[in-house]
Image (tube, rainbow, N blue to C red; front, side, top):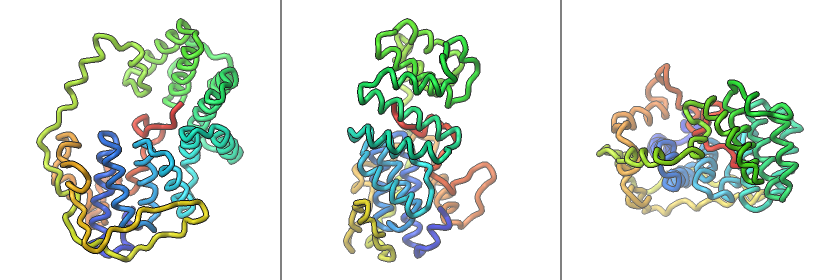
Length: 318
């Protein structure tokens, strides 16, 4: 990301960097506002592949699957990175085109994906089969991915990918009326997932389900400087040619346009918890722009490519 931003003049790079930091920080708390920030970055730097990636990921989190598909396809063309194939297939599902989703899954499977992507592809494939009313075929996909004829007792101590496959299988069992067996699976998953990375605890929610409501109280953190109140965007980036895939891109703001917290709809200080300070924001932007060497324990070169099998990444739905 730092390398990409060096292609912009310094003022524009700083503004784009701030929008990307804001998008990355807000994507879990407020994906719609994160998408607005990503779009603002695209308005100023639409020819940077990581910016298009940011818009695509934010759009996927926000549920704008058409825009997510356009932007992630543009990112793949510009960068050569095919790691979002499962997400693109899931977008086809969400847009009501399960046949297209299955076609994309089969194309990706033919390319020998790694284990992480294979889990995502199988989840999307199973979901697309369910969309088509092929419940038995959907179950077979998950059973094969789990090793064939899986049982709750045989789950053992799996990795997150296997846990997610098991969770999808349990949900499928419940959907077709096998509630007792599904409950056995959920119990086995909960025992193997003490951190609740799969969200299996929702199946056991009762009186404990309301205890977390008070954890969302925001602190008085001032993050207003995430977006600079600058005037005209720098005009050194034109739209890339996306006509082949219909990648319509938001037009750049006019010369007197001003990007501010108000223009994005609310004060950012209400959106992010108190763990982040203004100094953190300034340091992250400076690091993103390459003005300081990155610390050993943090790497912001890939703001939107999260760790392998991280549940917080919002993987393809099933």
